[in-house]
Image 1 (cartoon, one colour):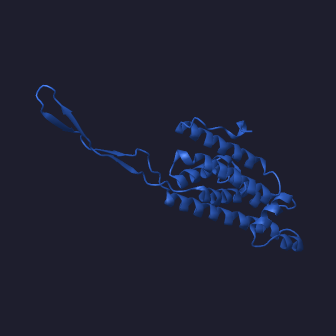
Image 2 (cartoon, one colour; image 1 turned 60 degrees about the vertical axis):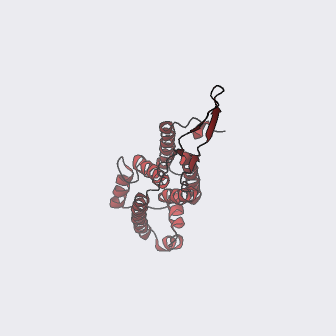
Length: 217
């Protein structure tokens, strides 16, 4: 999947998340019930025990440590890819490489999307390892990180699951716009894997009104 796809998801997801409010407390005050005996004329008073009810809704807390760890890890991997792309571009005929590359990573994705480049065997081998099964940018690992991000940001709050999915969809769309069209097949497979992960979470949480994206109009 495009490296910035996770970055987009991270920023959009974090802006979508709102910490859950602390549960409120509700108290029932006691009341006195008077009953008179018709035979004796004696009046009896009865007091109910005071009952304190606490809202049972669970509070969910963002896993800040995991969020920071994931962000640091993905940034390191992004910089590594930028370095690889720089090496590829250095091997191109100078003027063109310099004209398309800058500090802006958007230029990198547009360059890659154009397909107008060659790679040396070592760089190609590294890229193949990264997207192979178990590699950092493989479908399984990338989709897992995105879902871990969503869970860490919300603390696993079921009520936030749909907003996390919406954030992912928005981040993916931004990645496509950055790429200049549909992302490569591996990214599309990652997209499917992430949505499947959200569907499985919804089933686990027992969200009856949840609808997979494929079933939405």
